[in-house]
Image (spheres, rainbow, N blue to C red):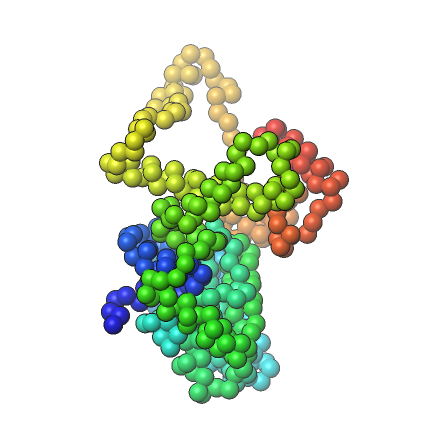
Length: 387
Protein backbone atom coordinates (compact mmCIF):
# COMPACT_ATOMS: atom_id res chain seq x y z
CA UNK A 1 0.00 0.00 0.00
CA UNK A 2 1.28 3.45 -0.90
CA UNK A 3 1.76 5.88 1.93
CA UNK A 4 0.10 9.27 1.86
CA UNK A 5 3.42 11.07 1.85
CA UNK A 6 4.69 9.28 -1.27
CA UNK A 7 2.58 11.08 -3.88
CA UNK A 8 5.30 13.62 -4.75
CA UNK A 9 7.42 11.10 -6.64
CA UNK A 10 4.76 10.99 -9.35
CA UNK A 11 4.10 14.72 -9.44
CA UNK A 12 2.53 16.36 -12.47
CA UNK A 13 5.48 18.73 -12.89
CA UNK A 14 7.87 15.78 -13.26
CA UNK A 15 5.49 13.66 -15.31
CA UNK A 16 7.33 14.13 -18.61
CA UNK A 17 10.30 12.40 -16.95
CA UNK A 18 8.62 9.52 -15.13
CA UNK A 19 6.28 8.74 -18.04
CA UNK A 20 9.24 8.31 -20.40
CA UNK A 21 11.74 6.94 -17.85
CA UNK A 22 9.63 5.07 -15.32
CA UNK A 23 12.42 3.82 -12.96
CA UNK A 24 13.59 7.41 -12.40
CA UNK A 25 10.71 8.05 -10.00
CA UNK A 26 12.07 5.67 -7.36
CA UNK A 27 15.70 6.48 -8.18
CA UNK A 28 15.15 10.20 -7.50
CA UNK A 29 13.88 9.40 -3.99
CA UNK A 30 17.51 8.82 -2.98
CA UNK A 31 18.35 12.48 -3.57
CA UNK A 32 17.30 15.49 -1.50
CA UNK A 33 14.68 17.75 -3.07
CA UNK A 34 16.72 20.94 -2.95
CA UNK A 35 15.03 24.20 -3.82
CA UNK A 36 16.60 27.21 -5.55
CA UNK A 37 16.28 30.96 -5.88
CA UNK A 38 14.61 30.38 -9.26
CA UNK A 39 11.97 28.14 -7.69
CA UNK A 40 11.34 30.71 -4.95
CA UNK A 41 11.00 33.46 -7.55
CA UNK A 42 8.47 31.36 -9.47
CA UNK A 43 6.47 30.64 -6.32
CA UNK A 44 6.31 34.32 -5.42
CA UNK A 45 5.30 35.27 -8.98
CA UNK A 46 2.39 32.81 -8.66
CA UNK A 47 1.37 34.34 -5.31
CA UNK A 48 1.37 37.78 -6.90
CA UNK A 49 -0.62 36.50 -9.89
CA UNK A 50 -3.26 34.93 -7.67
CA UNK A 51 -3.68 38.19 -5.77
CA UNK A 52 -3.91 40.31 -8.92
CA UNK A 53 -6.44 38.00 -10.57
CA UNK A 54 -8.61 37.85 -7.46
CA UNK A 55 -8.49 41.63 -7.25
CA UNK A 56 -9.49 41.99 -10.91
CA UNK A 57 -12.35 39.51 -10.46
CA UNK A 58 -13.62 41.24 -7.31
CA UNK A 59 -12.74 38.34 -5.00
CA UNK A 60 -11.53 38.82 -1.40
CA UNK A 61 -7.76 39.03 -1.30
CA UNK A 62 -4.84 40.53 0.55
CA UNK A 63 -1.69 41.82 -1.11
CA UNK A 64 1.27 39.47 -0.58
CA UNK A 65 3.79 42.08 -1.79
CA UNK A 66 5.17 42.99 1.69
CA UNK A 67 6.12 39.32 2.18
CA UNK A 68 7.59 38.76 -1.30
CA UNK A 69 11.36 38.97 -0.91
CA UNK A 70 11.92 38.76 -4.68
CA UNK A 71 9.24 41.23 -5.74
CA UNK A 72 10.29 43.80 -8.34
CA UNK A 73 8.76 46.16 -10.89
CA UNK A 74 9.80 43.64 -13.53
CA UNK A 75 7.89 40.82 -11.81
CA UNK A 76 4.88 43.08 -11.40
CA UNK A 77 4.87 43.93 -15.13
CA UNK A 78 5.22 40.34 -16.29
CA UNK A 79 2.54 39.09 -13.93
CA UNK A 80 0.20 41.93 -14.92
CA UNK A 81 0.56 40.88 -18.56
CA UNK A 82 -0.40 37.33 -17.60
CA UNK A 83 -3.44 38.54 -15.66
CA UNK A 84 -4.54 40.74 -18.57
CA UNK A 85 -4.33 37.68 -20.83
CA UNK A 86 -6.51 35.61 -18.48
CA UNK A 87 -9.08 38.41 -18.23
CA UNK A 88 -9.19 38.71 -22.04
CA UNK A 89 -10.04 35.00 -22.30
CA UNK A 90 -12.79 35.33 -19.69
CA UNK A 91 -14.29 38.44 -21.31
CA UNK A 92 -14.17 36.81 -24.73
CA UNK A 93 -16.16 33.84 -23.45
CA UNK A 94 -18.72 36.13 -21.81
CA UNK A 95 -19.18 38.11 -25.02
CA UNK A 96 -19.87 34.84 -26.85
CA UNK A 97 -22.75 34.19 -24.45
CA UNK A 98 -21.01 31.69 -22.17
CA UNK A 99 -21.11 31.85 -18.37
CA UNK A 100 -17.61 30.65 -17.41
CA UNK A 101 -16.73 29.14 -14.07
CA UNK A 102 -13.32 30.59 -13.10
CA UNK A 103 -11.21 28.82 -10.49
CA UNK A 104 -7.81 30.05 -9.30
CA UNK A 105 -5.12 27.87 -7.74
CA UNK A 106 -7.55 24.96 -7.86
CA UNK A 107 -6.47 21.61 -6.45
CA UNK A 108 -7.18 18.83 -8.93
CA UNK A 109 -7.08 15.10 -8.23
CA UNK A 110 -5.95 12.71 -10.97
CA UNK A 111 -5.61 9.71 -8.66
CA UNK A 112 -7.80 7.63 -11.00
CA UNK A 113 -4.76 7.31 -13.24
CA UNK A 114 -1.74 8.09 -11.01
CA UNK A 115 -1.43 6.71 -7.45
CA UNK A 116 -2.17 9.56 -5.04
CA UNK A 117 -1.83 12.00 -7.91
CA UNK A 118 -2.92 15.58 -7.41
CA UNK A 119 -1.72 19.07 -8.23
CA UNK A 120 -2.71 22.72 -8.37
CA UNK A 121 -3.97 24.34 -11.57
CA UNK A 122 -3.18 28.05 -11.85
CA UNK A 123 -6.36 28.96 -13.73
CA UNK A 124 -9.33 26.77 -14.66
CA UNK A 125 -12.04 28.21 -16.90
CA UNK A 126 -15.02 25.93 -17.51
CA UNK A 127 -18.02 26.37 -19.78
CA UNK A 128 -20.59 23.96 -21.21
CA UNK A 129 -18.46 23.63 -24.33
CA UNK A 130 -14.86 23.63 -23.15
CA UNK A 131 -12.39 23.20 -20.34
CA UNK A 132 -9.47 25.67 -20.33
CA UNK A 133 -6.31 25.55 -18.26
CA UNK A 134 -3.85 28.45 -18.22
CA UNK A 135 -0.50 27.87 -16.56
CA UNK A 136 1.99 30.61 -15.66
CA UNK A 137 5.62 29.65 -16.19
CA UNK A 138 7.82 32.41 -14.78
CA UNK A 139 11.15 30.76 -15.55
CA UNK A 140 13.23 31.79 -18.55
CA UNK A 141 15.77 28.97 -18.71
CA UNK A 142 13.72 26.59 -20.88
CA UNK A 143 10.86 27.47 -23.23
CA UNK A 144 7.84 25.34 -22.39
CA UNK A 145 5.30 24.16 -24.97
CA UNK A 146 1.66 23.39 -24.27
CA UNK A 147 1.58 20.79 -27.03
CA UNK A 148 0.87 17.42 -25.40
CA UNK A 149 2.20 18.88 -22.14
CA UNK A 150 1.76 16.04 -19.65
CA UNK A 151 1.57 18.32 -16.61
CA UNK A 152 -1.38 20.24 -18.01
CA UNK A 153 -2.96 17.05 -19.36
CA UNK A 154 -2.86 15.58 -15.86
CA UNK A 155 -4.46 18.73 -14.44
CA UNK A 156 -7.14 18.50 -17.15
CA UNK A 157 -7.86 14.88 -16.20
CA UNK A 158 -8.27 15.97 -12.59
CA UNK A 159 -10.60 18.79 -13.57
CA UNK A 160 -12.63 16.41 -15.74
CA UNK A 161 -13.06 14.04 -12.79
CA UNK A 162 -14.26 16.87 -10.55
CA UNK A 163 -16.42 18.93 -12.90
CA UNK A 164 -17.20 16.71 -15.89
CA UNK A 165 -20.51 15.53 -14.43
CA UNK A 166 -21.71 19.14 -14.13
CA UNK A 167 -20.65 20.33 -17.58
CA UNK A 168 -20.89 18.77 -21.00
CA UNK A 169 -17.61 20.07 -22.38
CA UNK A 170 -15.93 17.97 -25.04
CA UNK A 171 -13.02 20.28 -25.87
CA UNK A 172 -9.91 20.86 -23.76
CA UNK A 173 -7.65 23.89 -24.33
CA UNK A 174 -4.28 24.05 -22.57
CA UNK A 175 -2.16 27.23 -22.48
CA UNK A 176 1.34 27.99 -21.23
CA UNK A 177 1.99 31.68 -20.55
CA UNK A 178 5.74 32.28 -20.19
CA UNK A 179 6.19 36.07 -20.15
CA UNK A 180 9.95 36.38 -19.79
CA UNK A 181 10.43 34.40 -23.00
CA UNK A 182 7.46 36.06 -24.74
CA UNK A 183 6.02 32.57 -25.13
CA UNK A 184 2.28 31.93 -25.23
CA UNK A 185 1.68 28.35 -26.33
CA UNK A 186 -1.78 26.78 -26.73
CA UNK A 187 -2.78 23.19 -27.44
CA UNK A 188 -6.28 21.93 -28.12
CA UNK A 189 -7.51 18.36 -27.79
CA UNK A 190 -10.74 16.50 -27.07
CA UNK A 191 -11.95 14.85 -23.89
CA UNK A 192 -12.08 11.48 -25.65
CA UNK A 193 -8.50 11.82 -26.91
CA UNK A 194 -7.28 12.85 -23.45
CA UNK A 195 -8.97 9.82 -21.86
CA UNK A 196 -7.45 7.56 -24.53
CA UNK A 197 -3.96 8.91 -23.69
CA UNK A 198 -4.64 8.48 -19.98
CA UNK A 199 -5.63 4.83 -20.38
CA UNK A 200 -3.07 3.77 -22.97
CA UNK A 201 0.00 5.81 -21.94
CA UNK A 202 -0.38 7.44 -18.54
CA UNK A 203 -1.89 4.67 -16.41
CA UNK A 204 0.61 1.93 -17.47
CA UNK A 205 3.57 4.31 -17.05
CA UNK A 206 2.36 5.44 -13.62
CA UNK A 207 2.04 1.82 -12.46
CA UNK A 208 5.61 1.05 -13.55
CA UNK A 209 6.95 4.28 -12.05
CA UNK A 210 5.24 3.64 -8.75
CA UNK A 211 6.79 0.17 -8.59
CA UNK A 212 10.22 1.43 -9.70
CA UNK A 213 10.08 -0.81 -12.75
CA UNK A 214 10.54 -0.39 -16.50
CA UNK A 215 13.47 0.71 -18.65
CA UNK A 216 15.66 3.75 -18.18
CA UNK A 217 15.37 6.13 -21.13
CA UNK A 218 17.37 9.21 -22.07
CA UNK A 219 15.83 12.40 -23.46
CA UNK A 220 15.13 16.05 -22.78
CA UNK A 221 13.21 14.94 -19.67
CA UNK A 222 16.61 14.27 -18.03
CA UNK A 223 17.18 18.04 -17.59
CA UNK A 224 15.60 18.29 -14.14
CA UNK A 225 16.24 14.73 -12.97
CA UNK A 226 18.02 14.66 -9.60
CA UNK A 227 19.88 11.48 -10.56
CA UNK A 228 21.07 12.68 -13.97
CA UNK A 229 24.75 13.11 -13.06
CA UNK A 230 25.12 9.53 -11.81
CA UNK A 231 22.71 7.86 -14.22
CA UNK A 232 24.37 4.93 -16.02
CA UNK A 233 21.89 4.99 -18.91
CA UNK A 234 22.60 8.68 -19.58
CA UNK A 235 26.35 8.09 -19.36
CA UNK A 236 26.19 5.18 -21.83
CA UNK A 237 24.05 7.25 -24.18
CA UNK A 238 26.48 10.17 -24.22
CA UNK A 239 29.65 8.08 -24.31
CA UNK A 240 28.49 6.57 -27.60
CA UNK A 241 29.99 9.67 -29.16
CA UNK A 242 33.43 8.46 -28.06
CA UNK A 243 33.58 6.29 -31.16
CA UNK A 244 34.15 9.48 -33.14
CA UNK A 245 36.94 10.72 -30.87
CA UNK A 246 39.91 9.77 -33.05
CA UNK A 247 38.50 10.79 -36.41
CA UNK A 248 38.81 14.24 -37.94
CA UNK A 249 35.48 15.89 -38.93
CA UNK A 250 36.28 15.92 -42.69
CA UNK A 251 36.66 12.12 -42.58
CA UNK A 252 33.24 11.53 -41.06
CA UNK A 253 30.24 10.54 -43.15
CA UNK A 254 27.37 13.02 -43.41
CA UNK A 255 25.10 10.78 -41.34
CA UNK A 256 27.76 10.65 -38.61
CA UNK A 257 28.03 14.47 -38.51
CA UNK A 258 24.22 14.65 -38.29
CA UNK A 259 24.22 12.11 -35.46
CA UNK A 260 26.79 14.14 -33.54
CA UNK A 261 24.90 17.42 -34.09
CA UNK A 262 21.73 15.87 -32.71
CA UNK A 263 23.43 14.94 -29.45
CA UNK A 264 26.35 17.29 -28.89
CA UNK A 265 24.38 19.82 -26.81
CA UNK A 266 23.14 17.08 -24.50
CA UNK A 267 26.67 15.68 -24.34
CA UNK A 268 28.00 19.09 -23.30
CA UNK A 269 25.31 19.50 -20.64
CA UNK A 270 26.03 16.00 -19.35
CA UNK A 271 29.80 16.59 -19.15
CA UNK A 272 29.34 19.95 -17.42
CA UNK A 273 26.87 18.37 -15.02
CA UNK A 274 29.41 15.69 -14.12
CA UNK A 275 32.05 18.37 -13.49
CA UNK A 276 29.67 20.40 -11.32
CA UNK A 277 28.59 17.32 -9.35
CA UNK A 278 32.18 16.22 -8.74
CA UNK A 279 33.15 19.76 -7.65
CA UNK A 280 30.27 20.05 -5.17
CA UNK A 281 31.06 16.61 -3.75
CA UNK A 282 34.74 17.60 -3.39
CA UNK A 283 33.71 20.76 -1.50
CA UNK A 284 31.73 18.49 0.83
CA UNK A 285 34.89 16.43 1.54
CA UNK A 286 34.83 13.66 -1.05
CA UNK A 287 38.23 12.66 -2.49
CA UNK A 288 38.29 11.83 -6.19
CA UNK A 289 41.36 9.68 -7.07
CA UNK A 290 43.79 11.73 -9.13
CA UNK A 291 42.01 15.04 -8.52
CA UNK A 292 42.32 17.81 -5.92
CA UNK A 293 40.87 21.20 -5.01
CA UNK A 294 43.13 24.18 -5.54
CA UNK A 295 42.88 27.95 -5.95
CA UNK A 296 41.76 29.04 -9.40
CA UNK A 297 42.69 32.07 -11.47
CA UNK A 298 42.19 35.33 -9.60
CA UNK A 299 41.37 38.75 -11.08
CA UNK A 300 42.86 41.90 -9.59
CA UNK A 301 40.51 44.49 -8.14
CA UNK A 302 40.72 47.73 -6.16
CA UNK A 303 40.53 47.23 -2.41
CA UNK A 304 39.12 50.74 -1.80
CA UNK A 305 37.89 52.81 -4.75
CA UNK A 306 37.75 56.11 -2.84
CA UNK A 307 41.34 55.63 -1.67
CA UNK A 308 42.38 54.83 -5.24
CA UNK A 309 40.73 58.03 -6.51
CA UNK A 310 42.43 60.11 -3.80
CA UNK A 311 45.87 58.61 -4.47
CA UNK A 312 45.53 59.02 -8.26
CA UNK A 313 44.46 62.68 -7.96
CA UNK A 314 47.29 63.39 -5.51
CA UNK A 315 49.71 62.07 -8.11
CA UNK A 316 48.32 64.44 -10.75
CA UNK A 317 45.95 62.08 -12.56
CA UNK A 318 42.74 64.11 -12.72
CA UNK A 319 41.19 63.09 -16.02
CA UNK A 320 40.29 59.79 -17.63
CA UNK A 321 40.29 57.81 -14.41
CA UNK A 322 36.50 57.35 -14.52
CA UNK A 323 34.37 55.73 -17.22
CA UNK A 324 30.65 56.44 -17.45
CA UNK A 325 28.49 53.99 -19.39
CA UNK A 326 24.79 53.18 -19.51
CA UNK A 327 23.69 50.19 -17.49
CA UNK A 328 22.88 47.08 -19.61
CA UNK A 329 19.54 47.10 -21.43
CA UNK A 330 18.10 44.22 -19.39
CA UNK A 331 19.03 45.99 -16.15
CA UNK A 332 17.45 49.23 -17.39
CA UNK A 333 14.23 47.34 -18.23
CA UNK A 334 14.22 45.74 -14.79
CA UNK A 335 14.75 49.12 -13.11
CA UNK A 336 11.94 50.85 -15.05
CA UNK A 337 9.57 47.91 -15.40
CA UNK A 338 8.64 46.53 -18.81
CA UNK A 339 5.71 48.86 -19.47
CA UNK A 340 7.58 52.06 -18.52
CA UNK A 341 10.65 50.85 -20.40
CA UNK A 342 8.62 50.38 -23.59
CA UNK A 343 6.93 53.76 -23.14
CA UNK A 344 10.12 55.71 -22.43
CA UNK A 345 12.76 53.92 -24.46
CA UNK A 346 10.83 51.66 -26.82
CA UNK A 347 11.69 53.68 -29.95
CA UNK A 348 15.35 53.88 -28.92
CA UNK A 349 15.94 50.14 -28.72
CA UNK A 350 16.85 48.06 -31.74
CA UNK A 351 17.35 44.34 -32.18
CA UNK A 352 20.14 43.70 -34.70
CA UNK A 353 20.15 40.35 -36.55
CA UNK A 354 21.40 37.55 -34.34
CA UNK A 355 24.51 35.54 -35.07
CA UNK A 356 23.54 32.51 -37.20
CA UNK A 357 23.22 29.17 -35.44
CA UNK A 358 22.77 25.66 -36.78
CA UNK A 359 19.57 24.13 -35.38
CA UNK A 360 17.31 21.13 -36.13
CA UNK A 361 14.68 21.56 -38.86
CA UNK A 362 12.00 21.27 -36.17
CA UNK A 363 13.06 24.69 -34.79
CA UNK A 364 10.27 27.23 -35.32
CA UNK A 365 12.57 30.03 -36.53
CA UNK A 366 12.61 30.71 -40.30
CA UNK A 367 15.57 29.42 -42.29
CA UNK A 368 18.22 31.90 -43.47
CA UNK A 369 19.77 31.81 -46.90
CA UNK A 370 23.48 30.99 -47.07
CA UNK A 371 24.26 34.54 -48.24
CA UNK A 372 22.23 36.20 -45.47
CA UNK A 373 23.69 33.90 -42.80
CA UNK A 374 27.26 34.58 -43.96
CA UNK A 375 26.67 38.35 -43.91
CA UNK A 376 25.03 38.21 -40.47
CA UNK A 377 27.93 36.13 -39.14
CA UNK A 378 30.50 38.69 -40.36
CA UNK A 379 28.50 41.58 -38.90
CA UNK A 380 28.09 39.85 -35.54
CA UNK A 381 31.81 39.11 -35.38
CA UNK A 382 32.69 42.75 -36.15
CA UNK A 383 30.32 44.01 -33.44
CA UNK A 384 31.90 41.61 -30.95
CA UNK A 385 35.39 42.86 -31.89
CA UNK A 386 34.31 46.46 -31.34
CA UNK A 387 33.03 45.57 -27.89
